[in-house]
Image (cartoon, rainbow, N blue to C red; front, top):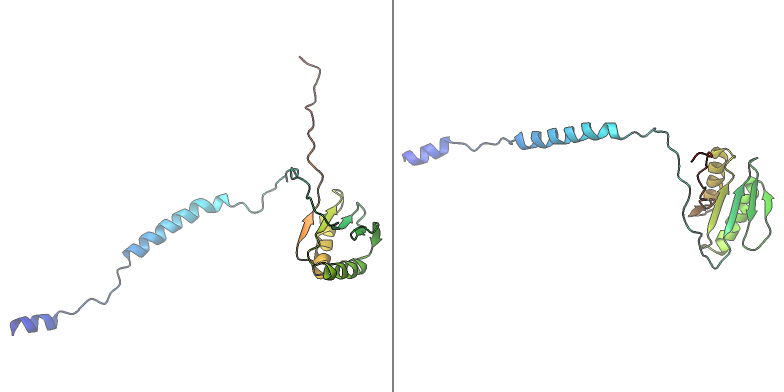
Length: 151
Protein backbone atom coordinates (compact mmCIF):
# COMPACT_ATOMS: atom_id res chain seq x y z
CA UNK A 1 0.00 0.00 0.00
CA UNK A 2 2.87 2.32 0.68
CA UNK A 3 4.12 1.94 -2.89
CA UNK A 4 0.80 2.93 -4.37
CA UNK A 5 0.49 6.11 -2.32
CA UNK A 6 3.98 7.19 -3.23
CA UNK A 7 3.37 6.83 -7.00
CA UNK A 8 0.05 8.61 -6.83
CA UNK A 9 1.54 11.66 -5.17
CA UNK A 10 4.31 11.96 -7.69
CA UNK A 11 3.03 13.79 -10.76
CA UNK A 12 4.62 13.97 -14.14
CA UNK A 13 6.21 17.22 -15.17
CA UNK A 14 4.22 19.02 -17.84
CA UNK A 15 6.92 21.58 -18.63
CA UNK A 16 8.82 22.02 -21.87
CA UNK A 17 12.56 22.20 -21.72
CA UNK A 18 13.30 25.39 -23.68
CA UNK A 19 17.06 25.47 -23.19
CA UNK A 20 17.81 23.83 -26.61
CA UNK A 21 15.48 26.28 -28.32
CA UNK A 22 17.28 29.22 -26.71
CA UNK A 23 20.61 27.82 -27.91
CA UNK A 24 19.34 27.54 -31.48
CA UNK A 25 17.92 31.06 -31.38
CA UNK A 26 21.24 32.49 -30.13
CA UNK A 27 23.15 30.74 -32.91
CA UNK A 28 20.72 32.08 -35.51
CA UNK A 29 20.98 35.56 -34.01
CA UNK A 30 24.76 35.47 -34.30
CA UNK A 31 24.58 34.23 -37.90
CA UNK A 32 22.20 37.02 -38.89
CA UNK A 33 24.27 39.65 -37.09
CA UNK A 34 27.37 38.55 -38.97
CA UNK A 35 25.73 38.29 -42.43
CA UNK A 36 23.55 41.43 -42.26
CA UNK A 37 26.39 43.92 -42.88
CA UNK A 38 27.44 41.90 -45.92
CA UNK A 39 24.05 42.39 -47.58
CA UNK A 40 24.61 45.78 -49.12
CA UNK A 41 21.57 46.07 -51.39
CA UNK A 42 22.05 49.67 -52.44
CA UNK A 43 25.64 49.37 -53.64
CA UNK A 44 26.82 51.13 -56.78
CA UNK A 45 27.95 48.56 -59.31
CA UNK A 46 29.39 48.55 -62.78
CA UNK A 47 27.80 45.97 -65.01
CA UNK A 48 30.20 43.81 -67.00
CA UNK A 49 30.27 43.71 -70.78
CA UNK A 50 28.45 40.84 -72.37
CA UNK A 51 30.67 37.96 -73.37
CA UNK A 52 27.69 35.83 -74.40
CA UNK A 53 27.57 34.30 -77.84
CA UNK A 54 24.85 35.18 -80.32
CA UNK A 55 21.73 33.03 -80.32
CA UNK A 56 21.26 30.70 -83.27
CA UNK A 57 17.58 30.58 -84.18
CA UNK A 58 16.03 29.30 -87.42
CA UNK A 59 13.18 31.80 -87.21
CA UNK A 60 13.60 35.53 -87.40
CA UNK A 61 12.96 37.02 -83.96
CA UNK A 62 10.82 40.03 -83.19
CA UNK A 63 13.27 42.91 -82.75
CA UNK A 64 12.29 45.94 -80.72
CA UNK A 65 14.88 48.70 -80.52
CA UNK A 66 14.89 52.05 -78.73
CA UNK A 67 17.16 54.75 -80.16
CA UNK A 68 18.93 57.48 -78.19
CA UNK A 69 15.92 59.82 -78.54
CA UNK A 70 13.51 57.22 -77.11
CA UNK A 71 11.88 56.34 -80.45
CA UNK A 72 10.77 52.71 -80.77
CA UNK A 73 11.45 50.65 -83.88
CA UNK A 74 9.88 47.26 -84.62
CA UNK A 75 11.01 44.47 -86.94
CA UNK A 76 8.54 41.59 -87.22
CA UNK A 77 10.17 38.52 -88.72
CA UNK A 78 11.47 39.38 -92.20
CA UNK A 79 9.47 42.60 -92.55
CA UNK A 80 11.41 45.88 -92.76
CA UNK A 81 12.18 47.94 -89.67
CA UNK A 82 9.60 50.63 -88.96
CA UNK A 83 9.12 53.28 -86.31
CA UNK A 84 6.04 52.68 -84.16
CA UNK A 85 4.29 54.36 -81.26
CA UNK A 86 3.47 52.55 -78.01
CA UNK A 87 -0.08 51.50 -78.96
CA UNK A 88 1.00 50.15 -82.35
CA UNK A 89 3.84 48.24 -80.68
CA UNK A 90 1.46 46.46 -78.31
CA UNK A 91 -1.06 45.72 -81.08
CA UNK A 92 1.45 44.42 -83.66
CA UNK A 93 3.53 42.35 -81.24
CA UNK A 94 0.39 40.89 -79.67
CA UNK A 95 -0.92 39.78 -83.07
CA UNK A 96 2.46 38.30 -84.05
CA UNK A 97 2.87 36.41 -80.76
CA UNK A 98 -0.67 35.00 -81.03
CA UNK A 99 0.23 33.53 -84.43
CA UNK A 100 3.57 32.14 -83.23
CA UNK A 101 3.70 31.78 -79.40
CA UNK A 102 7.27 30.42 -79.52
CA UNK A 103 8.63 33.44 -81.38
CA UNK A 104 11.60 34.97 -79.62
CA UNK A 105 11.34 38.66 -78.79
CA UNK A 106 14.52 40.69 -78.45
CA UNK A 107 14.75 44.18 -76.94
CA UNK A 108 17.69 46.48 -77.48
CA UNK A 109 18.26 49.99 -76.27
CA UNK A 110 20.88 52.57 -77.13
CA UNK A 111 23.28 53.03 -74.23
CA UNK A 112 22.52 56.76 -74.23
CA UNK A 113 18.74 56.30 -73.82
CA UNK A 114 17.13 56.70 -70.42
CA UNK A 115 16.76 53.32 -68.72
CA UNK A 116 13.21 54.27 -67.76
CA UNK A 117 12.21 54.35 -71.42
CA UNK A 118 13.62 50.85 -72.01
CA UNK A 119 11.80 49.64 -68.90
CA UNK A 120 8.58 51.21 -70.21
CA UNK A 121 8.94 49.37 -73.53
CA UNK A 122 9.57 46.17 -71.59
CA UNK A 123 6.24 46.73 -69.82
CA UNK A 124 4.51 47.30 -73.16
CA UNK A 125 5.86 43.97 -74.41
CA UNK A 126 4.46 42.32 -71.30
CA UNK A 127 1.07 43.88 -72.06
CA UNK A 128 1.31 42.42 -75.56
CA UNK A 129 1.47 38.94 -74.04
CA UNK A 130 5.17 38.24 -74.46
CA UNK A 131 6.33 35.74 -71.85
CA UNK A 132 10.09 35.98 -72.40
CA UNK A 133 12.12 38.91 -73.67
CA UNK A 134 15.80 38.70 -74.54
CA UNK A 135 18.00 41.74 -74.09
CA UNK A 136 20.39 42.57 -76.93
CA UNK A 137 23.89 43.85 -76.33
CA UNK A 138 27.06 44.46 -78.26
CA UNK A 139 29.68 41.75 -78.11
CA UNK A 140 32.60 42.37 -75.84
CA UNK A 141 35.46 44.11 -77.57
CA UNK A 142 39.03 43.61 -76.50
CA UNK A 143 40.98 46.82 -76.33
CA UNK A 144 44.75 46.71 -76.42
CA UNK A 145 46.32 48.54 -73.47
CA UNK A 146 47.47 52.01 -74.37
CA UNK A 147 51.19 52.46 -74.45
CA UNK A 148 52.58 55.70 -73.13
CA UNK A 149 55.84 55.52 -75.07
CA UNK A 150 58.00 54.48 -72.11
CA UNK A 151 60.18 51.41 -72.22
